[in-house]
Image (tube, rainbow, N blue to C red):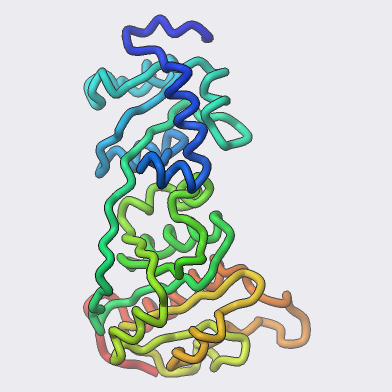
Length: 270
């Protein structure tokens, strides 16, 4: 269906241009907006976030019966062609929701010694950051701290990979040195190839898990601040890949912490 005869506002050329521009971090910052694409991600986001506006195909609006869920003046009907122009995906979605960028505090947080946190140190692949957000959400980690040179959480590919988890996981961009200096009693676990076997070394129920750049690993300044160097050993020491993808490494590492310390258990274990 290319005609937008549904009784809602047709999307304008200005709206199309605005949505497509949000693929760029520069324009996300300028407009203080970000886009969420695709039914599953949009539905998850709408559970907890108020949209600035939503663009959707006529078929999608009919099938989802959204007329009572979104204010009529925030819902715009678009043709398939228009959705393709607005989307950054290879296959255009049936719905794109645009949300205000949240205001971020500049305060350095004080961490809880019994909680797990993740530090993202220079990760550049938006898909990896989205996967880490989804992993954190699955394992009950509420806060991720990204170095300022890490990829933007609101990159469309990060949002897609997170699959709604970005609404339940707080992400703050902060210099890791500043964060660690403000929390000197919190252990810092660095994932390093020369670390101790994570399955055999002692772990604590809380701490910071530092994950490095896809090609270069942790930066030297973060390595110097690591208090516990850990590694995930290969199954076959004589034949294995050069390294694990950082998203996979995050899942394995966090899973081992949660295996040792189930919910409510804060006793240090070997």
